[in-house]
Amino acid sequence: MALRKKQEGKLIIEQTRDLDVVRAMLSAAGMISEGLEWPPACYLIAYFGIEAVGVVGVEPSLDAALIRSLYVVEPMRGRAIGADLVTAARKAAHTRGARSLYLFSTDTGDFFKRLGFVNVPVAQVLAALGAAPLVKYYGAHPDEFARERAWSLDISQDGVILR
Image (cartoon, rainbow, N blue to C red; front, side):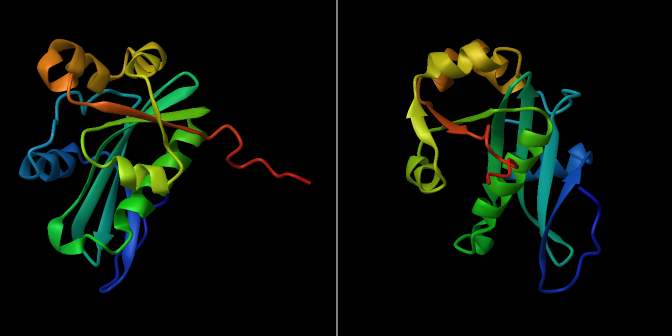
């Protein structure tokens, strides 16, 4: 994604390698920040004006990718920023060769269902993305992992022009 000029009152989403900003947002939200440095990963930040208001990560592996760490700051929720971040993550995953997009969630299943995701067995994500840092993190923390549900979205037709 090209960097865009931030404008007051405008929402933009940019790809970033500024992991300090990503880590600070995730830490403030009490979310996992281990593995952010994984070279294939990409992070997208939503800005409202010059203020960072949301973040999402994409951990690709061959033809699959994991959405990790979707977060929108509390005062900005309810404005479709989360959905916009998922759309941007979906594009980022597709451009990295992913045909399937996965994520883990403990309590936001209804949100992801509205975006087309379906609940899948956790083993499916483990098989597709065993090298992803978040998957490795959960492997080392089985108590946390036991609370997660897995979700999937077929993105194999993204960008395909049908005639």
